[in-house]
Structures are given as C-alpha cells and as structure tokens.
Amino acid sequence: MTSSSIRHLFLAVACATLMAFSAGKALSEASGPDFYRVVDVASDDVLNMRLGPSTDYPVIFELPHNADGIANLGCTGGLTLEEWTEATEEERAESKKRRWCLVGYDRTVGWAAGRFLADGGAPDEFRAGGPLSGLAGSEWRGTWLAGNRLEHEVTVAFRSGGEVAGDAGCNRFDGRFVDEHGTVSIGPLAATRKACPQDVMDVEATYLSSLQSAKSQVARHLVLALLDAQSVIIAQFARTDWD
Image 1 (cartoon, rainbow, N blue to C red):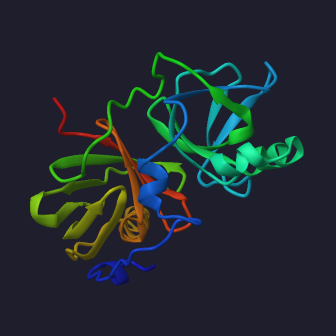
Image 2 (image 1 turned 180 degrees about the vertical axis):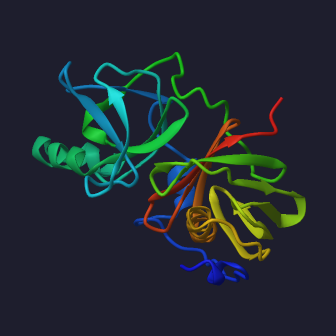
C-alpha cells in the first residue's frame, strides 16, 4: 500500500467466522482452567508462542520450559468434550496434536501448541488485569504490529457511540467500530493527508489496514489483542488511560 492510498481510507469490515465457530464464542468463552503451565518441554528448550494457531506462523515470544500462570484465552482444534469422552486413547492423542491455545504471558498474547500445556495455577504471569466488558471508553498504544515490536508510536481510542480515533504514526484517523461479545469490526476509517518519512508511512499503512481487518479481540484491563478472520494476531496494545 502506498502513502497516497492511505490518505483517504474507506474500507468496510464485515463479520467473519473464525475457524469452525465464531471468534467471539471461541475467545470470550474460554473453557478449561484459568491458567496453564508448560509440560513435556526439555529444560534447555522453550515453548513458542506464535502469531497464529499453526507452526506455519512466526514466533513472537518464548515460554520458559517451566512457565506457570499462563492465562488461558481460548483454544481451537481437537475434540469436543462429548467427543473426548467417547474417543479411544489413540484418537485422544491425535486430538492433542491438533489443539492450539491462545495464551497470555508477560503482557503478550500468542498461540501455543496445546499438547505442551496442562492445568496450571496462580500467580497470574500474564499480569494484564481482568477482562474488559467492552472496548468503549478505552485508549491504547500499539506495542506489536504484524508480529514485530513497534518502534513508531500509534494509538487508538474507542469512544462511546461507536466512534474510534487515533494516531497512525503520521496522520490522525477516525471512523466507526462495533464490539459485541468478543467480535469486533473497525471502519470505515478516514485519515488526514500529512506526509512523513517513508518508514513512518509504511508503518502507518500497515497499521490502518490491520485495524480494518480485525474480526475479534481479547481485551484485558491492560492489554488488547486484535485478531483477523484466520485467528492471526494482527496487533497488540497497552492501555494508556488506566488509573
């Protein structure tokens, strides 16, 4: 996307399905324990947290081999509880290989292979606070974008009445958002027309495009993660308006 193409952005965002079920249900109604711990990882190894629920996605964080207090934000793949009770041991083993869990650790959200996770306990090592009931009234600073830590400051504020606004690094933007039960749509957005160095404009283009591709969110008091229609984490944020 060129700098000229982001000067006046209008991109409608439609509701989409995550995997075989809705994103809101998958992420906001996480079943299982509140916390996980890492299991079956050698003492000289780590468990990777990835952008998406597959080894095809880049690693964004590494969990220590003995990590505990890992927040359970919802899992996908594998067998349902009813299927599990009727499955053979072989079927259960195969199911574990397909299971991926969205987890939080050290204020970072990522996907981890479920076969390396077991019931864990406190203390909470996500340290992100309790779940938010909704995004309205919250303000955020970007920390991760497309799997990379942000070096340029970008912000977003979700206002009452479904209005969204922020700073994309060079230009200000505003528009609309809808946030319902963990599903989210942001846009259409409109931005001002200021020109900045190309590296800043490149980040801005990616940021605005990412916001408008969001389909679901995980929102805690201090941390926000946005995911796209394929369950890939497209951006993460730190809260800026908390007391």
